[in-house]
Length: 349
Ligand SMILES: NC(=O)c1ccc[n+]([C@@H]2O[C@H](COP(=O)([O-])OP(=O)(O)OC[C@H]3O[C@@H](n4cnc5c(N)ncnc54)[C@H](OP(=O)(O)O)[C@@H]3O)[C@@H](O)[C@H]2O)c1
Image (cartoon, rainbow, N blue to C red; front, top):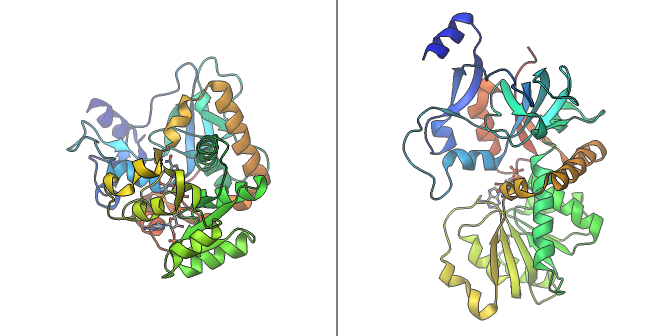
């Protein structure tokens, strides 16, 4: 309380988007004046944040995953995990980063605020030529791509490589998967929920079949596109009632990789014929990326920075909103047919 009174008295508060308990993001998120984070200790930097993405996953964190505690938190939590900004100050022992430098950061709980104090190893200098908006999107989605590709590779490891189907293929992550499939010759089939979405994807990635679950015969179309036997792997970000259908699209011995929950409804595990068809269901999350060694993480981050520098079109921005307009930003994230990622912005000073 004393800290809050002091900082208010000094006029040195910062804006932040906070929530007091897990629930639907539109209902619990609120704009708040918060005390700024502490000055950087040894090995830390303080960053003035300019731009941060609103990922569907950020909203899922606010909502709370199954098993998350219900009821009010002891103190408000600031939303967000990724962003970019400018270093304001650096703690003792920080050598490679200096005030004024543009950086991207992840994973930093509290990214939806105007200032963050961060361990310097979670901060990545923005490559020259990469603009601020691309930099704000530089880490989470490319690192998710790498995590998904590794999971696909593991599912194919028994020598039975085969077709891969991905759902929500028009998403920002889905487009990265398509670009990687084109680059590495992965036999991908894209699945979306509307004919317009399928058409847009076919134009963007000619040569990769794009089908819509809106077509009455979409299951037969997927079966044809996967050579009649079904998919070796399904990469799924929709889940819910679609899960049963997706398991039905797998070849025997295939793997359903689930990494998102955009859909409604649910599918009982018992309905999936896992045992007779030797199917695998595997959950994949970017949280697992933090378990990689520092050297492996550095390689992955270098990949992400290279991608941002060489393929900026893969980091499309759907819209920009000031922090104060976070409710409109959330509505935009959920708007059908949105293309790209929504950003929350704040001024440089
Ligand atoms: N596990 C992880 O660590 C991790 C990390 C990053 C992302 N993700 C997940 O990856 C997914 C994509 O993220 P993103 O940021 O790339 O998304 P995004 O750019 O916001 O795109 C969302 C896409 O999902 C589609 N969609 C929304 N609701 C749908 C539904 N009920 N059925 C079918 N399609 C639906 C939309 O299709 P329309 O064009 O038809 O509207 C849109 O193409 C999300 O589920 C996210 O949580 C997971």
